[in-house]
Length: 58
Image (cartoon, rainbow, N blue to C red; front, side):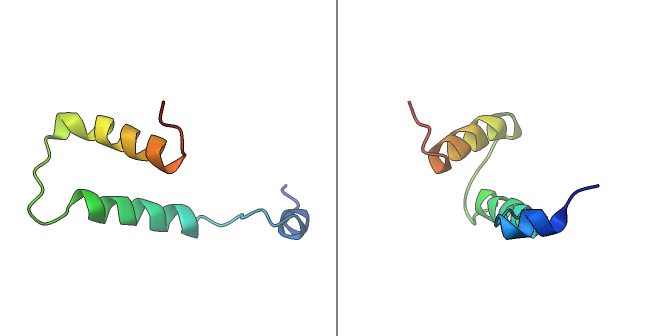
């Protein structure tokens, strides 16, 4: 059983709200008006977007 008080004391987020909000935001950006996406290319687009956000572009 997780020690939620210890997590809170350390400032560790234990809720899923931030993750759910991010997923919703990515979904909105992918569905930008006028954008044309091929389903097969979407994983590569998301891979690059995640790398960019994580400052992990090489």
